[in-house]
Image 1 (cartoon, rainbow, N blue to C red):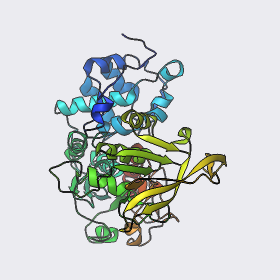
Image 2: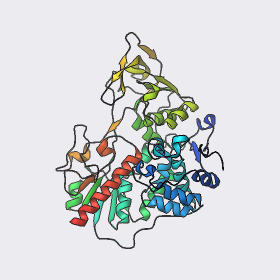
Image 3: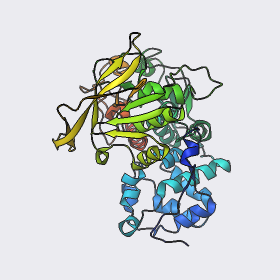
Image 4: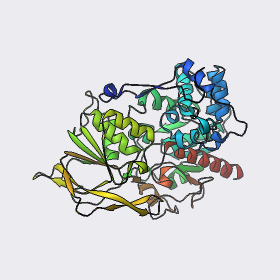
Amino acid sequence: MGDVLKKVPVREQDPKVRAANFEEVCLGYNKEEAVEEAQRCIGCKNAKCIAGCPVAINIPGFIGHVKEGNFEEAFKVIGESSALPAVCGRVCPQESQCEGKCIRGIKGEAVSIGKLERFVADWAKENGIKPVAPAVKNGHKVAVIGSGPAGLTCAGDLAKLGYDVTIFEALHKTGGVLVYGIPEFRLPKDKVVAVEVDNVKALGVKIETDVIIGKSTTIDELMMDEGFEAVFIGSGAGLPMFMGIPGENANGVFSANEYLTRNNLMKAFRDDYDTPIFDGKKVAVVGGGNVAMDAARTALRLGAEVHVVYRRSEAELPARAEEVHHAKEEGIIFDLLTNPTEILTDENDWVRGIKLVKMELGEPDASGRRRPVEIPGSAYEMEVDTVIMSLGTSPNPLISSTTIGLDVNKRKCIIADEEYGKTSKEGVYAGGDAVTGAATVILAMGAGKAGAKGIHEFLSNK
């Protein structure tokens, strides 16, 4: 047994090697490392880590089984609460959730809950362990819109309760943001996402791809003509935001959404896929969240020198500390307290540079963070051939605008209550980024669970 105050280190690809490939950065624990790390958990009776988990996994319960080397039981315990353990173990912000509440973390380092969850899920996959569908159906039909983390979670929870669930996905591939938004080196698509989707199908969930709700059919038609008694909307937030500065429509300017979708879903990084993407030699990524880190690290792997341009200081970077650390290790340059004012173009309307100003932090704004203020006379230009805008996303209004009686707020987000996902339209529930705007995978999963609970209560009382 090592030092109980410190986590068992997790193996990673060397930064110089991984900066040139799309293979997974973090290699995870092996059996011995997982058991050793699990021994650090003191199995609190009033476990604060559970309260820190948006889907309320029984964390001491599953870790207790890992301690004993009983990985199948550990998988079953996680499966009671989460449909996507291999995904969450890789992309959840554990440091601010379960691990942030871990008692071990007061005097030393928190238990590596995320890495243990990942280990258990990967072990289950390697050993062919799958969730079991319920023996009896209850005869009620439910439609789920979107096969991202909110939709998959809601569908999985309802299927376990015996509902006949069909997911409608607009894209040709299942997984939503898990397949188009998160790069291969953080979340392998075939090894992880496809397996988790298959586990949801094993519960009896049907999935129809290439169905655009609002175009192919509408929610009202699903309920009136197709016999669906309730609908959960988990369609995400795929509409990118821009700054509104001159030059944003130039060739060589991408939204992070488009840039990542071309790479992750359409495999632009692979030589055997004919997906057009501009391989810039010098790239500026505007923004400081996890999506900005994903876009920057992707551009680096495609051979570019990459600058992250962010208007606040490092302390305010919204991205996970692990993502920032990995980006720096790989050689990405951070231009902090810097803001773009114009994208410069050549005579053919291709990007040739970006005009920037330096900022300083003033008084706190509505978000509680100190507001960046431009320093007069600090403008300068940087030569780049590609600019990626990573400023957040909002929901596409297609569903809300084609559904009678569905209320949205001024940001075009669907209005739904937090506890049950109930909307203004009877029998229609919603959750995830379609309700909150862009947030994390695990918060979308929590909203999917709430929606399943709301639908179950609604149909039980009907």
